[in-house]
Image (cartoon, rainbow, N blue to C red; front, side, top):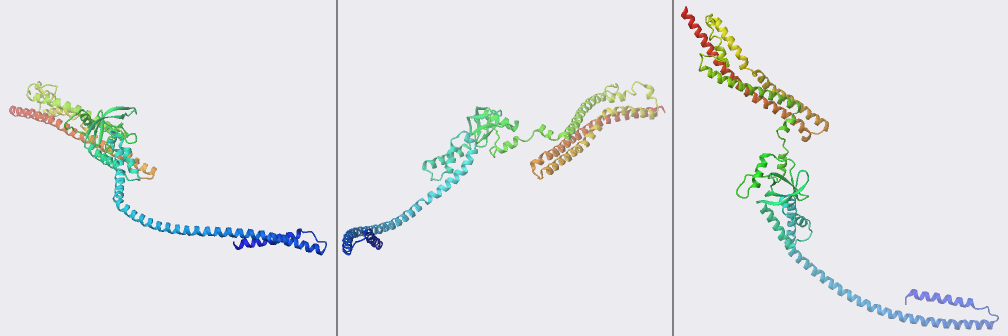
Length: 457
């Protein structure tokens, strides 16, 4: 029994005794007091006996419990020792198994890292490859494998190897298959598609863009032009042999960029008002040059024909009109040689305006073309600097409009000046050849007149 229990019993006994004495009635005599004391003593002895019996019983019970607890303690100590020994043995075994696991799984861990890295790189290729339009189920598998945090199974590794091999194999094939194609209007339809490896795809002579999110094709809203569309049509019509075709090594972006290049009319539109003025001058000069070339060609033909028959002047050509000035008019042939020379010069000069017609305007257009182009260049530079000032940055996209106008104006100015320069030189050569014939024949007439004058003298 513990010390605290004994103290509690002692206090209980004192309290009971005090209560018994307090509860007894006040004695009337000494005998009553003695009797009362004796009764109280007996009662206390009885209570003490009961308490001793209770204390003894509790003591025996506590001793039994103590013995049981000690036995249990011994048992638990023995069990703890056994568990500690077993724990140490298990720890040692776990360490050995862990080392064995790490030794055996080392290559698998390295393989898992490589598979994740390769599959992650390959997933981006599969997502943007036009081959996925023909095999749409592979993208989900590759993406799942790239995001997996567990070792791939043998079946996954085999399929991954197969998809890598299929991508390489299909990259070297020209394949025709049915696929859903979205028209520029937005309406989808099933159409035959010809795919050239992973580089390009066409249908009906039109190039296609691959929409990775929708996993289907869409006809390019702006095609790269007939130079590219014609080979596409020939490729679609072919079933064997070799056919000239167009490949985009960037797998789409380069073809898209090329299709956005402006055509001739769009380039001219970028020249704005100055460009239109330059073109107007060029067209007028070209029309006048063509007209004069035709005129001089006909004149040269008629003059050559007239050279074969000088005795019969024909007024439909300059030489005939010059010869006709004296042929059939004997009075003029008898005039003084100086007068005859003046009359001949007059007849030749009358033909000069028609022969040299429009050449002055062409020379003006040749000089004005580059100057007009320079004006367009200056205007374009003003627009460029204005865009830089307004935006506060030198972004090439913001400056593109002004630079384009400047360059187009310069090109247009040189574009009309150079052809008109050659045209003017050609016209000058043609007119001078006719003038050379007129001068030769007029000089011959004058020489003949002077010979006749010498004979008469």
